[in-house]
Structure formats: C-alpha cells, structure tokens
Amino acid sequence: MKKTAASKKSAAADRASTTEEAPATEKAPAAKKSAAAKKAATAKKAPAKKAPAKKAAPLKRQAPAKKPAVVPKKATAAVKGVAPAKTVAPKPPRGESRTALVRRARRINRELAEVYPYAHPELDFENPFQLVVATVLSAQTTDLRVNQTTPALFAKYPTPEDLAAAVPEEVEEILRPTGFFRAKTKSVIGLSKALTEDFGGEVPGRLEDLVKLPGVGRKTAFVVLGNAFGRPGITVDTHFQRLVRRWRWTEETDPDKIEAAVGALFPKSDWTDLSHHVIWHGRRICHARKPACGACPVAPLCPAYGEGETDPEKAKKLLKYEKGGFPGQRLKPPQAYLDAGGQPAPPLGAG
Image (cartoon, rainbow, N blue to C red; front, side, top):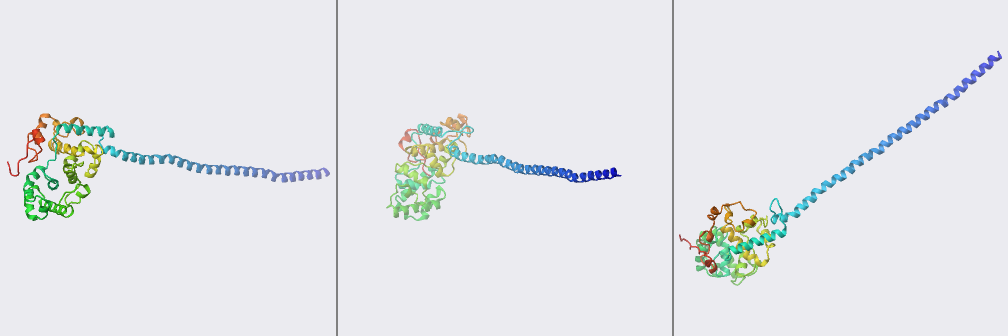
C-alpha cells in the first residue's frame, strides 16, 4: 500500500511536471511563430522598399526619354539656323556654302557684264523728273510702252510745276496706253505737287525723301538714285525677283528681303549695274514662261537649267530684243547700245 501511495505521488509529480513543462513547449512554437512573423514582416517590408525602387527605375528610364524630347528642339534650332543657307542657294541635294554662293553669284554677274556691256536703264529720260515719272508709269506695263507714251506727256508738261497744275482728265487721256491710267495720273500729279511744294520743284537725291512721294516705293527710288544721281541701289522688279530665285541666290519673296539678301552678296558699288544685267537677261533670255536655257551664257552656273528649252537652235528662236534681232525698248538709247547693234524702239502707233 505504501508503494502504491508512493507510486501515486510519483505519477502525480510526473503529471505536474508534464503540466508545468507544457507551457514551455507551447511558448517555443509561439516564439517560432513570432520570429516567422517578424521575418514575414521584414519580407513584406523589403518588397515595399523595393517597390519604390521599381517606381524610381522607370523615372530613371524616363530621364533619358527626356533627351529625345530635347533633341527635336535642337534639331529645329539647327534647321532654323540653316534656313538662311537655304535662302542663299543650296543646290539640292548638295548644299552650297556661303562662300561658294558669293563666288557663283559674282561670276554670274561678270558673265552677264560681258554679254551686256552696254546695259542701261531702258526708260527714256533727260532729267531726274522725267525718270521718276517714267518709272512710276512703268508699273504693270513694259518700258517700251512707257517710252512710246512719255514724249507727248513731257512735251505738254515739261516741269513738275506744269504737271502739278494739269487737268487730270487730259493727263489720263495721254496715259491711257500704259494701263491703270487713272491711278497713274493721280500718282504723277500728286508727286509733281509734292516736288513743287516740298522740294522746290527738284527731285530729292535721298531715299527717305523719294519714298514719301506719291506712287514712289523703294524700287522706283533706287532706279532714280542709281541712274539719275549715281548712287548705288538694287532694283527689285519682276525680272530681278524671278532670276535671283532661279539662281537660288535667295528664296525670299518679299522685295525688301530680296534686296537685302542679294545686296549682301555684292559690293555696294556693283548694285546698280547688277540690277541692269539681271533685268536685261530676264527680258532677253531668261523669260518667265519659256526661258531660253539653250542660249543662256550662264547655264553652267544655273541650278534651274532645264526649266526651259535646252536645244540651242530652238532656244535662239525664243530670244527677244537685240539678241533676237528685235528693236530695244528705248526710242533714244545710248550710243553704246546702238554701236553694239541695238535698234531703237518704234514710236507709239508705228508699225
């Protein structure tokens, strides 16, 4: 019985021991779970930290992406910078440097000077007043038609004072053959009044004064300055505009911009004769509709060669004025022109 009691006590102790150790056994898994939870939390936090890194990575990738966005701007700026070069004669697809352009342009002028050594203004005039009036009348018509009309006008109104006091209807009748005769009558009478009232009946020799006269723009002013006063100027008429664009001296279309672009290619002392050479060539050979490319002395220097007739024999038939054996535009041309074989124009109504 004692053994049995002892045995019971031992069993009870064993149970108690087991009972006391059980919490310890339970605590160990709890600790493991806690450690696992911490690891899991750490693992969860780690991706959380990496997530922004992944978001930051695209930002870094976008940073280079901004560079292409900047490149077009630079490219555009470069194109804008090259635009003037295009304006001054790139020969597609090969470009032309500024130096090469200047050399080619000046060579063309030298070649034309040899072909037209007697080039001169093709309006008849004896003084600055006649020249400014004739130049105003030459708008939208030929110099030939003006030269056939002005003798009667200047015979009746020889001075600015005379023309300023004229009856408009009588002047209109004289100017009718030139076209737009009412507007032209208003201009020539108006500029005559301005000359009489503001300049003592004399044509001023300054650009800023000339352009204040009714009907007088920069083109007319430079014709007067260059040919009546010997002051250099570029005359940008329709022929001049056409040819300098064909030669790709400039791609500008505004007359003032053309004047500036072409003027920059030549010494100022060449401007007046350059204008004569270009205009003469435009009237005689490099026509608007059918340029005579096969008879052109500057064909090797012309980027537009081939726009017109290239066959030499057919091209010769397209030549006008003295190059084609036809009368020139002046009734009273300079002697040098006559000595070179030029023929004076017929008077109004002749032929």
